[in-house]
Image 1 (cartoon, rainbow, N blue to C red):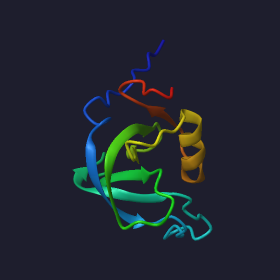
Image 2: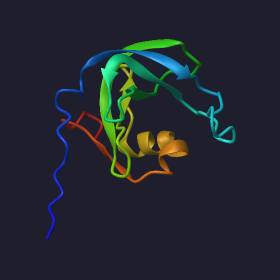
Image 3: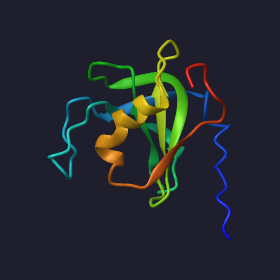
Image 4: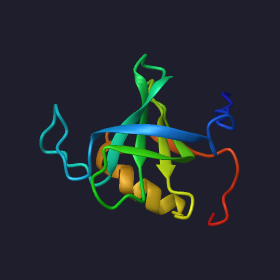
Length: 125
């Protein structure tokens, strides 16, 4: 029998990060033009993910395209069949349910097998 161990993201969740947006809300995926980004998507310069690239982030709560964004990591979407986790970054005054987050990132995550993880349970969960 195998035991699934939940990754520990306690050093990430709650951390303030500065993000650069390379795929703003409303833009098309560079390799798959039929995928339109319903949220801002970017990366944290200088922090590297499992794929050796800058850490990817979904930015929720910014309802217009942005070039940069500085806020806290709310949760981490861990992909089981890929090496790149995705950080969920939101303004501190905005809250999302787990279901809302999964719905907002489904446009891209539906192609992967993963789970939303958090270090501690926020007020709205």
